[in-house]
Image 1: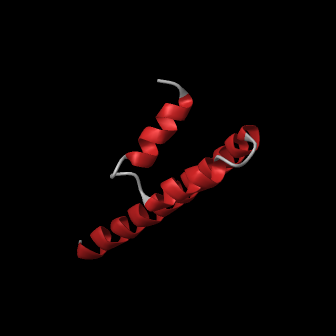
Image 2 (image 1 turned 60 degrees about the horizontal axis):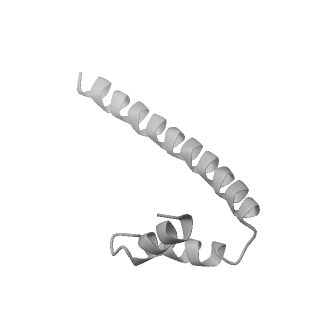
Image 3 (image 1 turned 30 degrees about the vertical axis):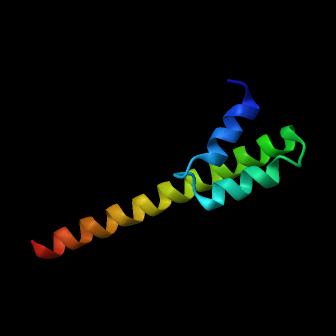
Length: 69
């Protein structure tokens, strides 16, 4: 399967989120190097955000457990 077929399969998959489907459609009209760079930046930012939110949730859980004794 080539990349265009891969993209088409993702676009046609009913489990694909609307956000991803819209992003893929918009990205098809852009320079693929720019899209790849933007996607990498987006992945880094949200990986960091996920890690921070996980750390906050774990800290809150630890405080709640300590409060229970």
